[in-house]
Length: 200
Image 1 (tube, rainbow, N blue to C red):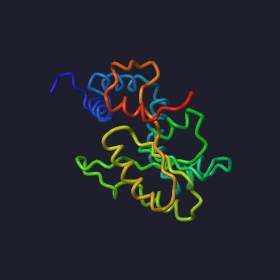
Image 2: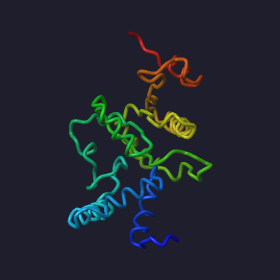
Image 3: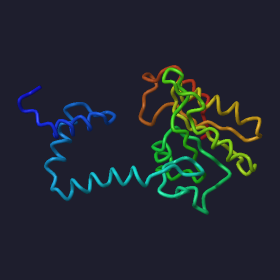
Image 4: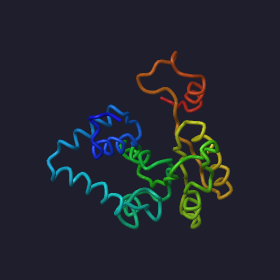
């Protein structure tokens, strides 16, 4: 232990290190930044964390984060309730929403099927998705899980589960990113790009 080690400061650094993508140097910079904040701002920061933990919950319909029984998308009268876009995380829903191109609803699984991580279908919000299809008002379910092994496995599992219900199942098209070079794309990405090609 360093002679310069200050226990409360070290604890703060350790808490920042627990955040995803934060290494020890960044954690130290963040800790020193917080320490140099005026007391009122530091208190606001701490209150925001506690407030989020106490007030943010899951939407009763789509399982996205919300501060009430239903999230703003599920409460909206103008959204197309016949389409559900299935995503892995709330961040994915925000990314799709930021395009301004989608006007349906979402369903957040809170993960993907990953046997290596001990995450099976029972750990995901699949039962809630199935209950949304009971009244036959949903016409299309868009699989917008990530293009990873786990995301693909989850999409395939869900499509097999939902197809007998008579719902149209679609998958997000993906392939070559804008500004990308063909020579740097892997074979799977190129194959998907060919499959998902559209008429100009």
